[in-house]
Length: 379
Image: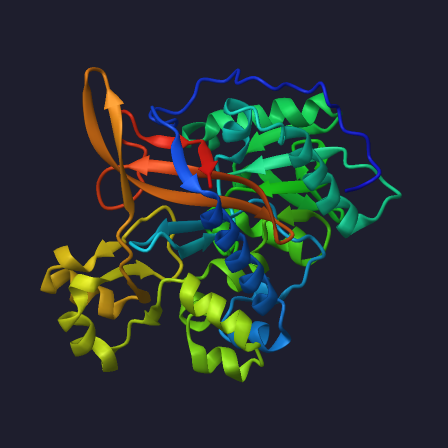
């Protein structure tokens, strides 16, 4: 991937305490053809997002930070899928700061940890060339020590520092921008591994981070432009719209792949309120800029009051694709869990694919026996 040396003997075991209910009690068995179809869908999406016509369209109302064009690609995109009743994968959303990849890699011994270090080095080299090494990384999130995935931040710190990269874990308000550098106390920051959920960097406590980014004085990954192009859920209403795809000049084969591989999505607007309410039992409602399943609603359980709030907000309505289920043994009994799939992607290529087992409306890591699970394929 690049010319920098990566320490192949870097830590490969999980030293930090794991988040509660992070790993499931069971593996998930998936047909190999499902993963092949999944790869095809991701390739098709990436090809459309690369089109200037698509980018112009989705960036029309995007914030200023999304219009800045960095050279970094963005690390750890997460493509999430359900498998429908025909056994075919359906994309339900894309995230641009998907967590859990390192913990999964270490737990299931996929030997991707070294590749992850190379990925961050490549982000640096794309942005700064080969003349200067990557010396410092800041892992930035709100109140990081209280985050569910703080243990993964600690594992990244250990991994990076084993490769000679000083690593700081901090909140955005701990950063200062002056003298054309982003600083943590007296340490200049080369690259920020961005774990914030204010994807556009608009909050007051992120002003230093945003200013350094827009001046190209720090590398941020993933960055606001990536979120605007990939993860804003309104984009799924474009990627699953045949007429819109035709207007971008997308070829028929790619169109078929997207229309079959993405759960059909439309914008929630006052003009289609009556139709949406009538068909709500077959829909799932998601905030356009939401994350972590927050404020997402299964239409079947929707009240009129909540529906009115959805109409007043910025939402999309997605055809509900019931997830497959799997029995998991917990003690001497078995419990039924829902299954979804996540592909971690960098530069259009899948790094790691895993499953998540859960109960309830959405993935939540609250149920004993649920959580991330390795995938075992069969023909």
